Length: 167
Image 1 (tube, one colour):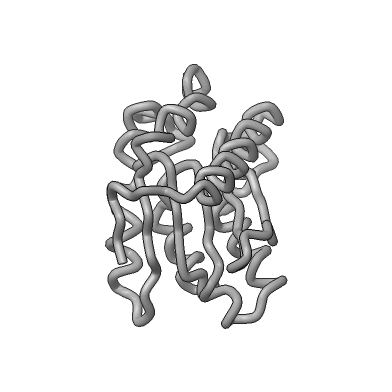
Image 2 (cartoon, rainbow, N blue to C red; image 1 turned 30 degrees about the horizontal axis):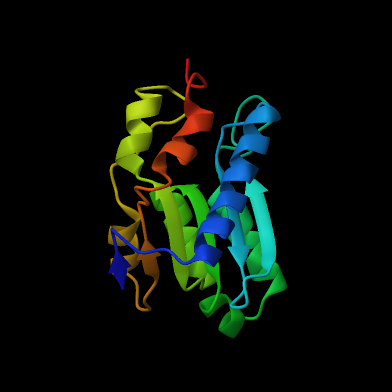
Protein backbone atom coordinates (compact mmCIF):
# COMPACT_ATOMS: atom_id res chain seq x y z
CA UNK A 1 0.00 0.00 0.00
CA UNK A 2 1.34 3.43 -0.91
CA UNK A 3 0.04 6.70 0.46
CA UNK A 4 1.75 9.74 -1.00
CA UNK A 5 -0.72 12.31 0.35
CA UNK A 6 -1.93 10.68 3.53
CA UNK A 7 -4.21 11.82 6.25
CA UNK A 8 -2.19 11.16 9.36
CA UNK A 9 -3.60 10.10 12.68
CA UNK A 10 -2.70 12.09 15.79
CA UNK A 11 -0.59 9.13 16.90
CA UNK A 12 1.29 9.17 13.57
CA UNK A 13 1.96 12.91 13.96
CA UNK A 14 3.21 12.50 17.53
CA UNK A 15 5.47 9.60 16.59
CA UNK A 16 6.86 11.45 13.58
CA UNK A 17 7.67 14.37 15.86
CA UNK A 18 9.52 11.92 18.12
CA UNK A 19 11.62 10.84 15.11
CA UNK A 20 12.24 14.50 14.21
CA UNK A 21 13.41 15.13 17.79
CA UNK A 22 15.95 12.31 17.38
CA UNK A 23 17.20 14.03 14.19
CA UNK A 24 17.61 17.30 16.10
CA UNK A 25 19.53 15.51 18.86
CA UNK A 26 21.81 13.94 16.24
CA UNK A 27 22.55 17.39 14.83
CA UNK A 28 23.22 18.78 18.32
CA UNK A 29 25.69 15.93 18.86
CA UNK A 30 27.51 16.95 15.67
CA UNK A 31 26.14 14.11 13.56
CA UNK A 32 24.14 14.19 10.33
CA UNK A 33 20.62 15.41 11.20
CA UNK A 34 18.57 12.26 10.60
CA UNK A 35 16.42 10.38 13.10
CA UNK A 36 14.32 7.23 13.13
CA UNK A 37 12.19 5.33 15.60
CA UNK A 38 10.45 1.97 15.41
CA UNK A 39 7.18 1.47 17.25
CA UNK A 40 5.23 -1.69 17.92
CA UNK A 41 1.61 -2.14 16.90
CA UNK A 42 0.48 -0.36 20.07
CA UNK A 43 2.63 2.71 19.42
CA UNK A 44 5.31 1.95 22.02
CA UNK A 45 8.79 3.01 20.92
CA UNK A 46 11.03 -0.07 20.80
CA UNK A 47 14.04 1.48 19.04
CA UNK A 48 15.38 4.91 18.17
CA UNK A 49 18.54 6.04 16.46
CA UNK A 50 20.24 9.06 15.04
CA UNK A 51 22.74 8.97 12.24
CA UNK A 52 26.30 7.90 13.04
CA UNK A 53 27.83 7.83 9.58
CA UNK A 54 29.93 10.98 9.82
CA UNK A 55 33.72 10.77 9.64
CA UNK A 56 36.10 10.30 11.26
CA UNK A 57 34.67 7.93 13.90
CA UNK A 58 31.39 7.21 12.12
CA UNK A 59 30.61 4.24 9.92
CA UNK A 60 29.05 5.15 6.54
CA UNK A 61 26.52 2.34 6.94
CA UNK A 62 25.21 3.69 10.24
CA UNK A 63 22.21 5.62 8.96
CA UNK A 64 19.44 6.28 11.47
CA UNK A 65 16.92 3.98 9.77
CA UNK A 66 19.33 1.05 9.53
CA UNK A 67 20.36 1.42 13.17
CA UNK A 68 16.75 1.65 14.42
CA UNK A 69 15.62 -1.29 12.26
CA UNK A 70 18.50 -3.45 13.50
CA UNK A 71 17.76 -2.61 17.14
CA UNK A 72 14.06 -3.40 16.65
CA UNK A 73 14.95 -6.73 15.02
CA UNK A 74 16.95 -7.67 18.12
CA UNK A 75 13.98 -6.86 20.38
CA UNK A 76 10.89 -8.02 18.48
CA UNK A 77 9.83 -11.35 17.01
CA UNK A 78 9.17 -11.48 13.23
CA UNK A 79 5.37 -11.34 13.61
CA UNK A 80 5.67 -8.21 15.77
CA UNK A 81 8.09 -6.60 13.30
CA UNK A 82 5.57 -7.15 10.53
CA UNK A 83 3.09 -5.06 12.55
CA UNK A 84 5.68 -2.42 13.50
CA UNK A 85 6.17 1.02 11.94
CA UNK A 86 9.44 2.83 11.32
CA UNK A 87 9.09 6.63 11.42
CA UNK A 88 11.91 8.60 9.87
CA UNK A 89 12.72 12.21 9.20
CA UNK A 90 13.72 11.58 5.57
CA UNK A 91 12.94 8.95 2.96
CA UNK A 92 15.01 5.83 3.55
CA UNK A 93 17.88 5.42 1.08
CA UNK A 94 18.29 2.18 -0.87
CA UNK A 95 20.58 0.72 1.83
CA UNK A 96 18.15 1.53 4.63
CA UNK A 97 15.13 0.34 2.65
CA UNK A 98 16.92 -2.97 2.18
CA UNK A 99 17.62 -3.20 5.92
CA UNK A 100 14.01 -2.36 6.76
CA UNK A 101 12.83 -5.04 4.34
CA UNK A 102 15.24 -7.69 5.65
CA UNK A 103 14.26 -6.91 9.24
CA UNK A 104 10.62 -7.49 8.30
CA UNK A 105 9.20 -4.13 9.38
CA UNK A 106 5.76 -3.79 7.82
CA UNK A 107 5.24 -0.03 7.59
CA UNK A 108 7.39 3.04 6.95
CA UNK A 109 6.34 6.65 7.47
CA UNK A 110 8.72 9.40 6.34
CA UNK A 111 8.45 13.17 6.41
CA UNK A 112 10.82 14.48 3.73
CA UNK A 113 11.40 13.02 0.26
CA UNK A 114 14.84 12.09 -1.01
CA UNK A 115 14.36 14.73 -3.71
CA UNK A 116 13.71 17.45 -1.12
CA UNK A 117 16.73 16.27 0.87
CA UNK A 118 18.92 16.52 -2.23
CA UNK A 119 17.76 20.13 -2.60
CA UNK A 120 19.15 20.80 0.89
CA UNK A 121 22.39 18.81 0.69
CA UNK A 122 23.33 19.46 -2.94
CA UNK A 123 26.43 17.55 -3.95
CA UNK A 124 27.86 17.37 -0.43
CA UNK A 125 30.35 14.47 -0.35
CA UNK A 126 28.91 13.13 2.91
CA UNK A 127 25.45 12.66 1.37
CA UNK A 128 25.89 11.26 -2.15
CA UNK A 129 22.17 10.77 -2.72
CA UNK A 130 20.93 7.75 -4.66
CA UNK A 131 17.93 8.57 -6.81
CA UNK A 132 16.12 5.36 -5.91
CA UNK A 133 12.82 5.80 -4.06
CA UNK A 134 12.24 3.41 -1.16
CA UNK A 135 8.95 2.36 -2.78
CA UNK A 136 10.93 0.99 -5.72
CA UNK A 137 13.17 -1.04 -3.40
CA UNK A 138 10.21 -2.44 -1.43
CA UNK A 139 8.29 -3.22 -4.63
CA UNK A 140 11.01 -5.72 -5.59
CA UNK A 141 10.46 -7.76 -2.43
CA UNK A 142 8.30 -10.78 -1.81
CA UNK A 143 6.36 -9.24 1.06
CA UNK A 144 4.60 -5.89 1.18
CA UNK A 145 5.88 -2.88 3.07
CA UNK A 146 3.35 -0.08 3.47
CA UNK A 147 4.92 3.31 2.72
CA UNK A 148 3.42 6.62 3.85
CA UNK A 149 5.23 9.74 2.73
CA UNK A 150 6.39 12.28 2.02
CA UNK A 151 4.31 14.28 4.49
CA UNK A 152 3.73 17.76 3.07
CA UNK A 153 2.42 19.01 6.43
CA UNK A 154 5.67 17.99 8.17
CA UNK A 155 8.30 18.40 5.46
CA UNK A 156 9.38 21.85 6.69
CA UNK A 157 9.87 20.49 10.23
CA UNK A 158 11.96 17.63 8.84
CA UNK A 159 14.03 20.03 6.73
CA UNK A 160 14.76 22.47 9.58
CA UNK A 161 17.77 20.61 11.09
CA UNK A 162 19.38 20.45 7.64
CA UNK A 163 19.27 24.21 7.05
CA UNK A 164 22.85 25.43 7.28
CA UNK A 165 24.23 21.98 8.16
CA UNK A 166 25.47 20.95 4.70
CA UNK A 167 28.09 23.66 4.10
